[in-house]
Image (cartoon, rainbow, N blue to C red; front, side, top):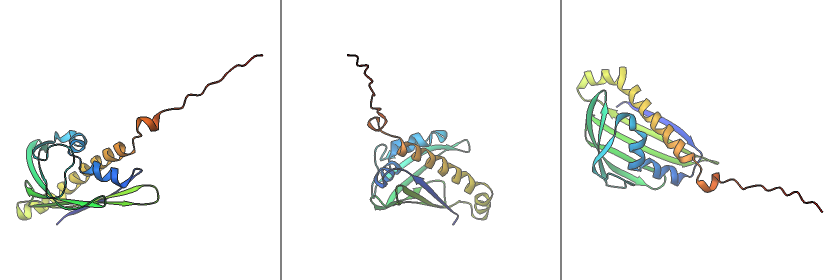
Length: 167
């Protein structure tokens, strides 16, 4: 089964990174290029253990449906979503989070199998693996940007005053 493994360093808490990664609304925004829409199961907010979401998205100019279920969940260290129904022969995505010195390391382990036997394997090697890798890299870049964004309070500048005192 082809595997994509990515590591992303995010300067934010492990809890924040974990929750952003399982947030349906954030996923919709981060995948705007493919017009992803949650149309079944959990369609907004945070998804948890045993819950499912069905996505409708456009890949390769074709609208596809993918239904996944959260099959493992250990907050805030990891969760796994697996395809229940969709275009792959098999699909499993492990999201792993670990706190380092001052950042969270987010690791994606994405396993997939294309349908159509030997033809599917050829397509995976020649095209699909790179396509999915870029898709995950774009999503991770977006998650990193959101997670590292400072709150209004953190961005607030303390005004400085100068007084010209004459006596």
